[in-house]
Length: 284
Ligand SMILES: Cc1cc2nc3c(=O)[nH]c(=O)nc-3n(C[C@H](O)[C@H](O)[C@H](O)COP(=O)(O)OP(=O)(O)OC[C@H]3O[C@@H](n4cnc5c(N)ncnc54)[C@H](O)[C@@H]3O)c2cc1C
Ligand code: FES
Image 1: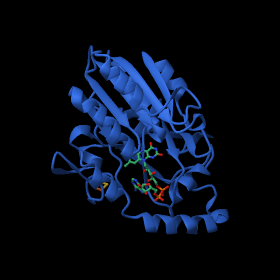
Image 2: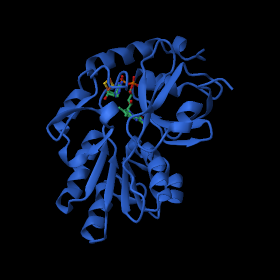
Image 3: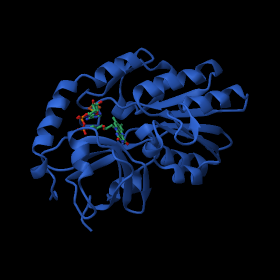
Image 4: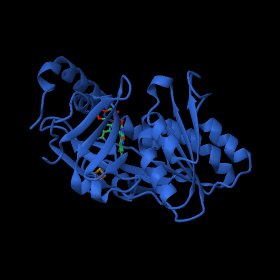
């Protein structure tokens, strides 16, 4: 089989898509917390996406179609071939071997990162509590995977259409307040969600990791576009992260940098939508 052939592609909701891609080198070396950079065709941009899982020579990704390249990616089908898949990139999650209780919190498309993390934490002998949340029931992803992988799972929706009504921070707060032993927490989701949710664990001094998603270009520490400020120091999220200690991240800096290219992204999307017919094709 050709490298980077899409093995399976399906919509998980109106805007979220899952794919299995034949990428042997990436699949054999990927660990929880790492990501890949996908270049769908010669014309589009390269997009960093978390590796959600691996099976044999294949990797799994889940992404939200929000801009030019992710929308293009969402039109591709099983059998189509991607131009390039680079990875695994970034540092693996700091999972301890042994008897820790870990809580993995995923919000929105950030839930894409949770199955591989839950699986690795469980394999290492830890007790795994999962909390996954979405705005509404239709946007919830990977519940079955997380049910199977976690010792306990809490599901929330902002609008109460499924599971516990409210944000994913709710069950986390309850767990912290209950006095149960919690050794580590991972929070993965939109910037604001990670910022607010990580405040829950701060008073309890629980080691809390977040996976940062600044704009990345090369993903190998060369271009500097993914600069973030952590503990007052400049870091490159692609090589020093993407996971960092949540309690020392400069969130305002991260969110300002994420908005830097909004005008260009809007312009690119408008152009893409106008020329949709000719972009929606098999890439070779
Ligand atoms: C390490 C990492 C892991 C990620 N994992 C996932 C994932 O598993 N699923 C998922 O849906 N999304 C993930 N993202 C975000 C994803 O890369 C962006 O949604 C995607 O690049 C948007 O590209 P676009 O051309 O479709 O949209 P655009 O219109 O170009 O951008 C839409 C928004 O996406 C962000 N973005 C744009 N370009 C980049 C870029 N090169 N790098 C990072 N962010 C960008 C910006 O905030 C921007 O405002 C991850 C980002 C990083 C850095
Ligand atoms: S993406 Fe270029 S240095 Fe990190």
